[in-house]
Image (cartoon, rainbow, N blue to C red; front, top):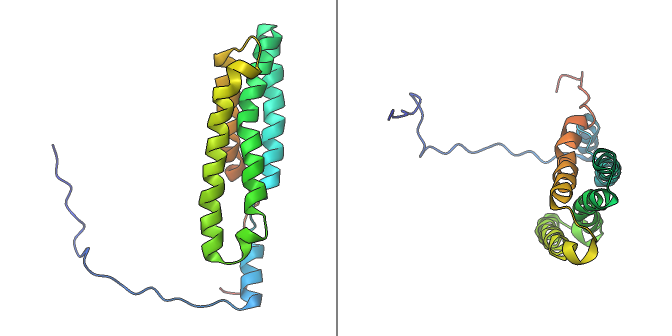
Length: 163
């Protein structure tokens, strides 16, 4: 087994104070324009489209409506909690200050996970002729939309003002 040695000159006990500068309103607006964010509603819309495509593909490959409903339900187990999460994060309470925004994020993420797990447990009672493989494929493919959204986010605009 090889031993990894620290880079020379590295001292883990040394703490450097980071410079903090409060941005003016103009600087904050310029930063938002250079680094645009992705709307959570856009991600949800793409998830809905992917869910429909996966359900149609399951129906096309298997010829069984049960597989299509199962794949669609798997996608809905991602989409419905994502809608709740997006709605919760976009609420006025979640944007009061940094503390409530952070708390709101964790609360809505917990709700999202609980609803997803609840929907998966309810699947055998709600989907007739449930195909577990199709449902899991629908769930996984719809979950991958988050990664696709990161790749497709608007490109940051470069500032030529020398900053």
